[in-house]
Length: 441
Ligand code: SF4
Image (cartoon, rainbow, N blue to C red; front, side, top):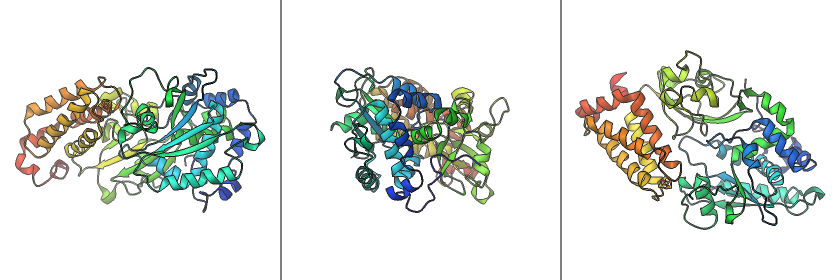
């Protein structure tokens, strides 16, 4: 059984409220951190090896150490709660059921970074959660854990919740900052990076909800103990939101030593695939990461089991591996059609493109049109090569990673499932009545 750090108290009734959270050890890590120097807190986070849980997996302690500290200029922590990646819903779970874990993590992190005003930027569709967070903020304030002179230390912190308006692109950190400043959420060109010029041109750290919540157990048990959990550079625990063709969809906390096979088939996690169907493929890190067929999902090309961690999922690079990403684990059984699935994703990225740069604005729409044609049985063989060519021209040629996020699913689908694309071209009449999966397994 995986060790639980973030969700260990999630089952306790009323844990959402300050009194219950406090009764079960809540805010003890904050009390401990506020007695440490900010450098000592930073050192614990660095030693823990915590990697950003939003998708990129960049070491959090290193990110914090890049924060510029010009004399007299305020600094900010902004929590990225714009969780909009299809298949990813673990931050929603944290905020809805354990809001004080996030607030406590923000208190420790803000103290370490020297932020006196911090923000939670939350996606517009999570319409019921800002009230939960604001209630938790008020409770923490009433108990002396937020506001002026916290616990008599002289440290002040205010936290504000800002609702987004339903744009996926605002999960990109610079688009988020633009939106937080009251403008359209268009990504900024980097450099300068937010650590130097972020919110209102002030040094800013933007971190995902889960990353900030993880700071609480790091301070609680110490960075070195945290680093002993997991394997290699995949330290600590990771939340995975599992969905698709599985018996037990939900949010699971894993310690990154379990295999993909165990995660899918064990009763502790996904509980297998309904109706005894075969596993066809999986997207393990949210819709942007490459889809992997079952044979490469359960084993690496070297025949080693594939593990649920950053290194093992990426083993073999994009040709045979994938990414941990945001931990949005989407399972496809044998009946699913990869062309249809890829078309759905292409429509999403086309809809969410902010339109600033040509390869993304034009390319995502073009890919969607071609995929729609192929899926309906109206495509030609050369369309598959054209699709491949378009995604190659998007990747790496855009202002922000949405371009890559739109290109990778198409590339992986063609690389691993070209036969399905060709079946659609060769069987136009069948495309109208059944999908590839049902027709061929
Ligand atoms: Fe906008 Fe797409 Fe360019 Fe990102 S890659 S800036 S979403 S057009």
